[in-house]
Image (cartoon, rainbow, N blue to C red):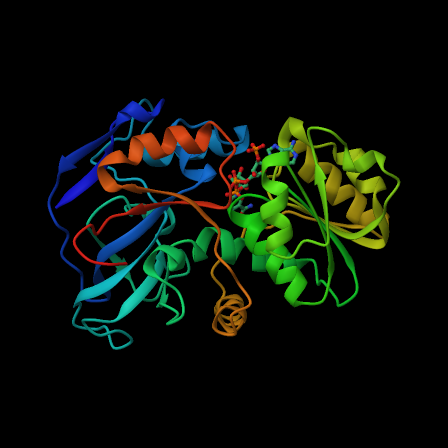
Length: 334
Ligand SMILES: NC(=O)c1ccc[n+]([C@@H]2O[C@H](COP(=O)([O-])OP(=O)(O)OC[C@H]3O[C@@H](n4cnc5c(N)ncnc54)[C@H](OP(=O)(O)O)[C@@H]3O)[C@@H](O)[C@H]2O)c1
């Protein structure tokens, strides 16, 4: 099969289209023919290991110190069709359309992949009938993280929610889920994304290049910050919270985690940085919104598998709106 092999840590030219062996499912796995996958900010951070310092050491130990230690294929989410099932698999049949998160197994930049059907680290779920493969491939990173963060924040109808970095994968889902739950949503991102953010339901938009939301004097019940790092001010953001406010660190720094634990212990504010996992309860809640037509997936650009490196260059140059999709299957309408 064709796959994009991750040959080195560094720029996108280390992503090379190669012929590799098609995997065979073990007895609790399914083989999926991949129709679509995505390029996320997280894929680019992983590719060149520009992850938060906290994650760099464990990732090098896991993937290889100087370069990926075996034939590795990046890609963390996909949608496709089940084409073979292991002996012990009862949940899926050949022909079922699914979407999936591959977790640290990665492997979605390929024509086929094998995944276990029951694992805390991965997710395989029937594809919603009202989404294309391209749209469904965006559910794990964007949708699952967004619903996880909003659930952790216990967003209530009528509350004021601000999403910093709202125009990307997680944010575009987050705005729509928060609106569906009855919140008043402020979306912060660059000027080019504000019109799109209004169309997906944001009540208020702020251009971060023109205005610092922490200096407007507004107070919020919930702030979801997927930007993090040196681009976000922890102290000023905390001061924007109302009494009993919740601040979700979607991209936490070590200092933010320590300061957050302290503030949560000594104040009425809650600072939360728990990484998203694939809880069936979260998936069911999100599926209900998708099936009710409450979620519009924003797809900025589509690339063929062979142009995955080009897609990485586009995503890391910034200015992606919503999602960038790789259409793996070129031979049929998706
Ligand atoms: N905690 C977890 O479990 C978890 C899971 C998945 C991902 N993540 C992390 O979360 C982050 C966001 O993920 P994503 O996939 O949503 O990324 P994304 O698609 O790149 O979206 C991020 C958005 O933030 C905007 N932005 C950049 N600087 C900003 C600033 N100073 N103020 C406001 N907005 C700004 C970007 O716009 P520009 O075009 O202007 O750059 C972009 O629209 C990534 O770093 C990823 O690693 C965390």
